[in-house]
Length: 412
Image (cartoon, rainbow, N blue to C red; front, side, top):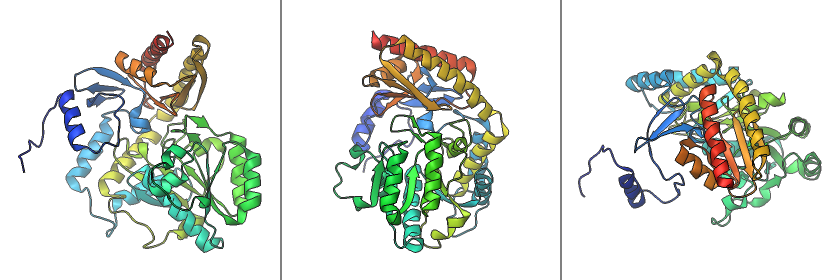
């Protein structure tokens, strides 16, 4: 075995070479660069170039980079205790669970390490409920174009064929029904026909990976009522929308409903890996002792960081800033619809925004990167815009100027 220098400052070429040689090739790295430092709304690559971050690690670093309170929480907790396991009570996990419940709905919390694991917990919870409380009902409804993670159950709940392809039979696909979003007639007919077999309805209130499509309020409220009437769990996947991204701490608040369960991850730790499933008190017994677990889930360090993240959102004026900046972003982006023939629609809620083009959008992403702005594209033709929630008006304007110039150059 050859010796290894355990910490090195590498050039971009060296990083790319070592990545090709040693890292499993599951990612294409479409940005083509590597980051070395971040502060506030800015990221800096290994060559020292500065970028305004309108991506936030795909809706993860909602407080930007290097937030002083988050950095101090990590330092303090890492010095004291990072991990003991779920064989022991855990002060940090208990305090975070209390905060999440107090700011959402009465229930119990299961902690995971990621959004995919939160989706896996949704699946097991829903199936356990169906087995115990609804005559072994096993069918779960989700939406076409949805995304619920990349575990086997998460893939199955995802309503995109490209995510299913290449793995053979997953689980019984007859146990999943994929419905078009916002089509209440089809939802009603499905429940009329199969209601006795359906244990849960899981939905994203804003489809993120699917192109930033917002669910209609009337549809969501009617769906909530239908589920209650038919003993179907109503579960919201807020992995991408949770923790302030839409201008409320949780997106379901916009819809004036209370779900039976809610999945969180991404921004919950502002970059530190953590996820959660909150289950309403009425249903919390359906995942009991020994039925689910996670070695790292809810460890001391992760839950301390997440607690400080939630604290920042509810004690600073960040949510008010999201509302104000959202109005500004939408006003600017909707001018793009008038300026550029290639822009067909602007969609979103809060600072969870998408610009639909009439063609693949990756070239705009690269143009923006070269000009010093980070965005990405999803569903091939949607530019996804997700700046930090505490972004300043000055930085917002600067970033949108770059995006405007990038689309102009793309359109020619």
